[in-house]
Image 1 (spheres, rainbow, N blue to C red):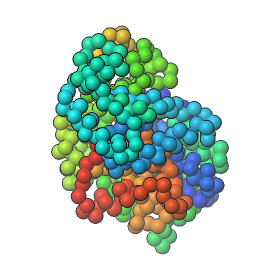
Image 2 (image 1 turned 135 degrees about the vertical axis):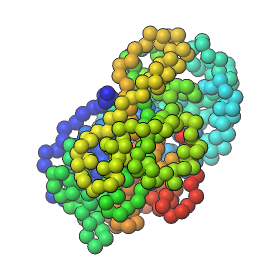
Image 3 (image 1 turned 30 degrees about the horizontal axis):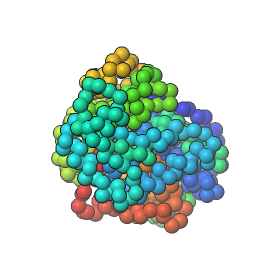
Length: 440
C-alpha cells in the first residue's frame, strides 16, 4: 500500500524551454527546483508518477547528523541549516522539528560503536551525549527492556515525508517553476556533446542544463547515453500505526526505529533489515558492490522478486532502451515483507507496555537506491556538458535532501559550492578508486 502523501496539481502546459529541467520529483529534485527558482532561473520539474511517489514518502523522516559517514558531514550540517529555513521561506510547514534523537541499546558493543563516533561529532560541532543505563531508562518511558546505555543527539530531528517534497515543489512553483506529473522523461536531447533538452512523453523541453534526480531510476535513465552509474536497489519495509500513546519523538534501537508523526501516529521500521533482490542490474554491478555486500551480509538478505522483470533494475530496463519502462511503472511500489512487519510490531509491543494494543494503519515496501560506497552522487557528468547527477542517496536522502538539492542547484547555476563535493563525484565509482563503505 502506498503511504499517504500530500498531492498537488500539475501544470497543464509543458514549456518549450527552461534554463534547467529536473528529472525526478522526490525530495532532492524538488529541493533543487526550489533553490534554482529562488535564483530566478526558469525550471521545469518532470516526474513520471506523482511528486514524492516513491522513496521520499516512504522514508522514516529522520533529519540527522548523528552517526553519519564523515564524508557526508558537511552536507548534513548544511542540510540541517536549510531545514530550519524552509518553512519561513516557503510559508508552509514541512513537519520539520528539532526534537533530538535518542538511541538506546542492551549491547555493550553497540554502545562502544556509538561512542567511537564522538571525534567526528566534536570535529563538526554536533551536540551529542552518551547516556548511561539510568539516563537511557529515564529518556525512554518503558519498563520491559534493561538498556546498558545510549546516546542523545540534541539538535537532530525529523520531517514529515508526506509533506516535505510536495511543499518544496509548491515553493518552487510559487517562484515560477513548473511541475509536470505523469510525464515520464524518456531521454536526453544532445547536440555536439552537450545536453540541450529532455524528451518527455509530452514532448521536448529545450534546456541549458539538466539535473537527473531520478532516484532508483537514475542508472537506467543515463545508460542509453553511455553513462555508467553503478546503482543497486535494496527493498525495505516500514509501516505506520494509527495515532497512539506518546513514548517519544524519534527513537532507535537495534530491533526497532520509530518516528512520531504530526498526527500522533508512528512510522516504524528496523534498521538494516532489508532484502537485496537479484536483478540483471544487480548482477551487472556485482563487482562494484561486493565490498558492501560482504560488510552487510548479516543484515541484508538476498532473494528473488518481481524486480527481476519490472522496475529500474529489471531485465527490460537493462537490455532495452524502450521508454515504456518508465511509463509502465509510474511508482515502484513493492509489497511490504510480512515477516518484517510482524517482527517490527512484536519488538515495539514487547518493549512498550503502552503500545500493547497499537494498531497498524498501513505498511509499505520501498526500493532504496544505493551506491557501492553508500555515499550519494552529487556531480557534474563529465561525459555530457550541462548534465548533473544527484542520486544514490543510500537511505540518507530525506535528511540530506535539502543539502543535496542546494548543492546540485549551485552546480547547475555555475556558482561556487557551499561544501566540498569531491567525495560525491560520479567518477569515484567508475575510475577504479578503492571502495570505502560508509555508515548505514
